[in-house]
Length: 277
Image 1 (cartoon, rainbow, N blue to C red):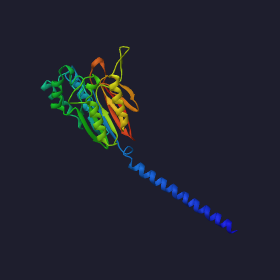
Image 2 (cartoon, one colour):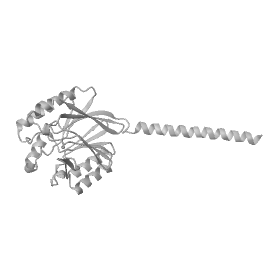
Image 3 (cartoon, rainbow, N blue to C red):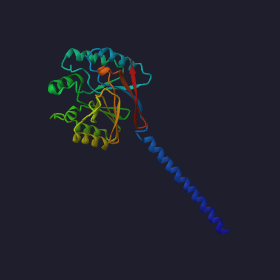
Image 4 (tube, helix red, strand yellow):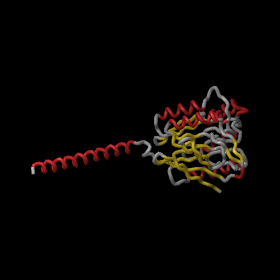
């Protein structure tokens, strides 16, 4: 009889201990979930690309996008322009000033990076100087809701030439280290993958350069890479990092007027492509 009581008592202790362990585990899980910075941010931002300002009809097309974005019902943290701001007119003071006035009509902050039609290889020093005078640095580091936005000028990688004063791979690694584990979204213009048009595949970046770029991206907490340049909607993978390619505002090749709304939620990046008549 005594043994049965001791057995029953032991069972009760085991059950109590089991519940205590479960409660501790649930508490720890709740603390970890609450403190995970990737679970809490939820916000929207907009991408525009390849405006090619000063081509025929460009001002009207940009104004339509500005008005559409300003009227969106959700809060937009910022607009990111992923390059080809003008149609090779960065050295024309009046053209650049008119473009800036137009872009400043956005109600939210706008961040720029240069494309291949902004800083020109054939006039590299001159156009680079003009860009930095009017739009700022070749690399931009901003943070929204704990998520780092890293904008990088990558034409030296895309066109495989050296700039002794600016190395995009160094800029990428420096920015990713500065993020210190925070989620990062990388923006640039000419994407690294092969391009398919006129029923033919065309080479992207040189393989050794692309390999270094992809390796760096996958060593850090990069949630997405966002580009323009192709004038098409495309999606690719750079290792485990998604690459999103947005269609342009420009009317090149009879493209429909386009911009994108991105949503960052639960540590992931999704988007909605918006078309304007």
